[in-house]
Length: 69
Image (tube, rainbow, N blue to C red; front, side, top):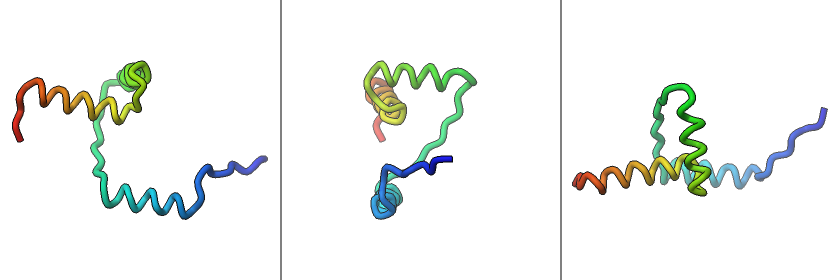
C-alpha cells in the first residue's frame, strides 16, 4: 500500500494552526439531511467555499435587515 504524502510540511501545518488559533473562531451549524449538499452546490456555483458563502449570506442578511450591533 502506498503511503499518502502530505501537501504541507510540518512547519507549514504548525504555522497554519497558530494562525487559526490567533485569528479565527469556529461556529458549528446543523442543517437537515441533504441541505449540506444543496448549500455546497450553491457555493460552488458562486465560486466560493461553503465557509465563505455562509459568511457572506450572514453578513448580507444582517445588512439587509439594518441590524446594528
